[in-house]
Length: 219
Image (cartoon, rainbow, N blue to C red):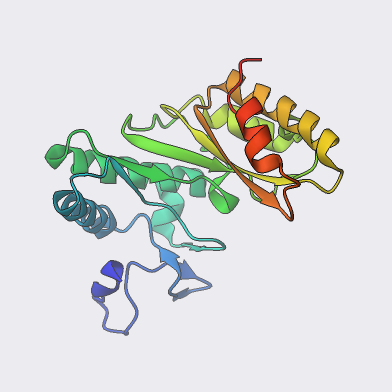
């Protein structure tokens, strides 16, 4: 709701909404709009002032979010992942002027999973959580060439990262165990520091037992 307030052309639709097929529509952000960073940063400044007990808070997109097609966004960076990172860097920089130790969480996934083609170092106070939504959920994740490339590229720019991993048990617990182990070994090698699994369907008791054995275990 905080982004609804800017309607400079008076058409009843916020100028901060994305331009899609020539029209501004609700359900996303024009990440290049000059006021987006200021409004988001002020929201976080106020939030942390009112909730000093929190070290970080989320600044992430929703599922199937619409992305802006305006010329300014196209010129902002190479892709939606670049747009997200540039905008988030700007937000946390302003927040840290008031709250130097606070962090915000970003989530590269779906349209923003593809990393920037250019090198954009992430602010050290960003907490990235890379999401494997849409990646093969049965095979070990490093066996998905596109996802492996995306992860390795992101980790050249991010200060740290967790993974929100989507996992399917359809092949049974022991193939799942082997797939998780290979996946965890890959995550350790690239430098992930945390894992959050979402099991698709019943977990066969694996959610607790496999977490204890596998999460961030050295290869």
